[in-house]
Image 1 (tube, one colour):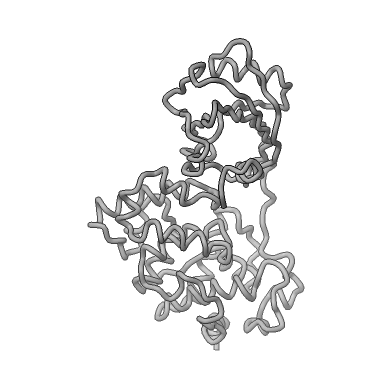
Image 2 (cartoon, rainbow, N blue to C red; image 1 turned 90 degrees about the vertical axis):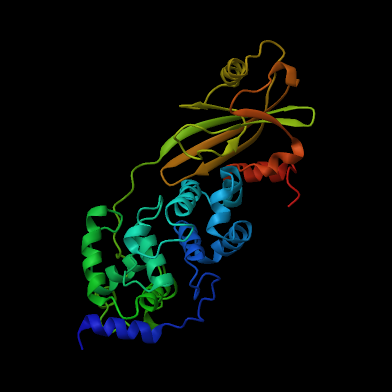
Length: 355
């Protein structure tokens, strides 16, 4: 038996569908599969479960998602991060309503026309829901192929993808696409894990390149990421009585469409007077405006590191009535708006939310 056929046979014999009981497994609903795959792009399966259940409860069908307001979708996505996924999902749901009569398309090429749906997600939906013979290539699969077949091309470089796709095509079981895809993903998630893989119980141990050559820790290989961009965010927790001033992020930047307190960003740490003067200009305030630093944190994103300071001040609403993208909201209504995750600790410390 060839190494390729042996891999597929051993993989399917190893797979136990009951090993990881996840709410999106063994279902045929393409919408629910789609939502789960988008969430899983940046979230581990165990962590994703409550977010998935909450999202499906709020938007049980593609139509429910399509007709929802973007603010509602972003609020349901709160805590998952990478909010462009939620915006794209919402946009794509509208496309399904308008161009596909409200039914998630079943063909791989049709799925690729939806915003935010790439080759991996399209393959997952088309194979799991419709049985189309398309192989999935995600982080787990990259790792398995790299170790078993000794593929040393860096997995975080797009030019390497063809090498991995070619190897995957050799072992892919076209007669059982959904079963094969689920099996290899679970294999990477539970056996051939990033750290401390269970090589002694691995069905591929007899011909795994990395195991035979003591390369488990070396593979898969990644190119060292670029140095993180450093940013300094100063937020103003401005309140008037029981109302708080919030604004929506509208620039093409991180956290687009999410809400925050009025922001003043600097390229380096700034003195208090400099920050106060700039908030005065932003809010068109003159004398009698004082701030106190009440909260500090650091937000680390994929390519950015943000040093955050939240300042506190109080004015009367008449001194600043808001603008097109800012508004005064009741203290108890703040939790109805989607904020970046960095605000979680602040809200808990100052008892904004009851949960």
